[in-house]
Image (cartoon, one colour):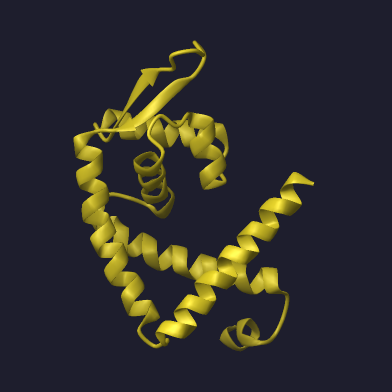
Length: 148
């Protein structure tokens, strides 16, 4: 099967294959912190965008609102986030990391960064920069096609 995946093919398939491999490996790293890749991403989103809604998190993680809500309910139960009423929309709650959530994210971030360094070790700084630029460009192009 490894030969099949290494053959040239659809760009989308190759990116998906890489993502699934990365996600599985990152999940293994994050397990020690009681987090999955989507949970880790959610904590990063809430750190960067305090006050986000359940819908915001669902969109950012490419999850359903129900799946995001289940994850956020578990985070709230574990004391990693808190929900506060939205100041102008009674149907929406804003989400914020707690101190415990910030600590968990900081601990997991160290492990994730170490793991990323290991993966990138075989590439030059120029190659890493090129791949990151390319991925940003693909993401941007896909976002534009979603709007149209």
